Length: 131
Image 1 (spheres, one colour):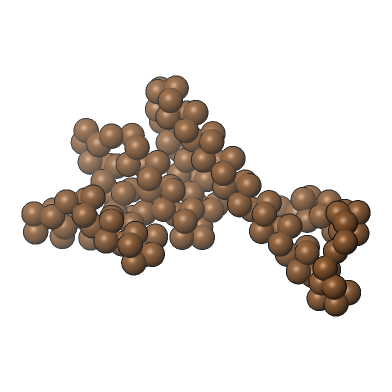
Image 2 (spheres, rainbow, N blue to C red):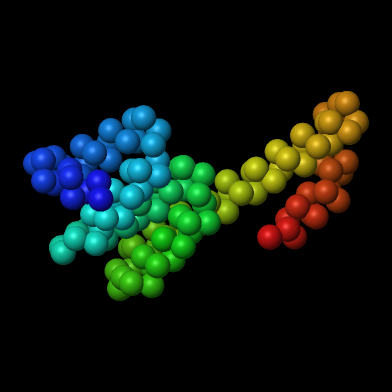
């Protein structure tokens, strides 16, 4: 486990995570945060940051699960509110991806950009109902 190696060498979790983050190794950073969150006395935000890194790394569903788990295991209202905001942020990213797909598909089929939202209303509504 990477966290054990870091701590045995006298390193810090923050230094390791920063290093992974700077190299855009979000899943590795997430693993370090998640492992750190399990340590006795770890602050609740470590679990939240693990979820955030998973989201940055493209694993939005895994990030959502981590956030909901964090929300269920805390009694702090501020953590619950942060979880709600982060899940809403992930939902927004998913919605933006769906809009981009619909607009790209429209452009590919019609060889032009949509002139109004009316031209893509039906595919947008269909994309919204997809899981």
